[in-house]
Length: 480
Ligand code: ADP
Ligand code: GLC
Image (cartoon, helix red, strand yellow):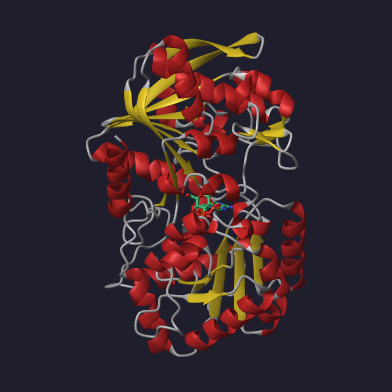
């Protein structure tokens, strides 16, 4: 099949979260299966600085209609592996910035224009370069206008650009909501600027466009596909989701084994597997050292890696700080984001520098080291479309403590409820729920044979992309 993907993040070129890992792994795996895959990505500064992108060739100069003006841009392309072409949509004014979405405090003011431009540039490239896709697959709000723009452009030019369109919701909390005035820059017919189109309470919602106008809608776990139909998790779009139930499905993400595998992980000081666990102790010592903690510490290490945001349950961890201060345990956190959460974690680390450590930056190496060197991974998300770290944790022999929501509920089994098959600890997404799970974790750690059994079952689980890729191939085939 000829498959065109469009997303705002792609590992290893640009990543702020799991979107990059998921799109990177899915597109690579589809290419390995022999499909002809193109991935469109904004030409962010970081992506353009990647060594692979140095080989990118200029494919096309763009003139994109944006309301009543035209904006220029360029398309550069390179091929990092067989059957895979990465197209960078470049326009320095929009994408030559230090971060993809904002300056750390606030989102960029021109995000509507940046991503409307991105989607239009993808369609224009498909048209001019005659890519003739079987499937166009757009991810999250930044690419959500694509299915609609494909159909609109086909109508205008009397050409077929793609046989079917697919839209994947990686997180319904991010909706691409912009002032109504942004609609003019889409150049879509005015009849789409209403409740049956992309209008949303006197604003526009790009995500809504993806949900309404793609031929198939997917999300990243079966449980989240159910949850987003409810007011509790739908973030106001549950009604819109409900209009697409016949075409909606939830396909669980996998783990990219080339990046996340303790037996081959080049970012670790030592490698290990279920058969030979010595390397995990080396990783543990290195982690303690990097955190400035006692390297001979024998108690439980709780690790955490996440965007610091309400979603990830950071406040539940902060509310349980007495546990980390009073018990003979360590808490090691890697995360950036919300300034208030960062300040509170920093204060906690300052209060107990021999117990709590925070690294407030993006650090790929440290994220692998925490997965490998910890005993428990803390992920009490309030909602979680899929979540990748709880899967990485299991494979790395680090027992996850997760709330019972979304993809977390689909990928972890509670070891107290199901002693014969359990791989982690599950809790209600509340302060008391997490507290209970932390105490149960400590009890588990106090019984080494039981801890090791839980750990080994996690390591034996198969989260490979094989299953997910087969799921998407079937979805594409069914759609066609
Ligand atoms: P989300 O996409 O909602 O952030 P996921 O669990 O799907 O959550 O994926 C998060 C990804 O981002 C993981 O690969 C995780 O290791 C990574 N990550 C999060 N914060 C950091 C950080 N500060 N440094 C490095 N990697 C991080
Ligand atoms: C989003 C979600 C996360 C998911 C990731 C990849 O960022 O928050 O749960 O794992 O996308 O699909």
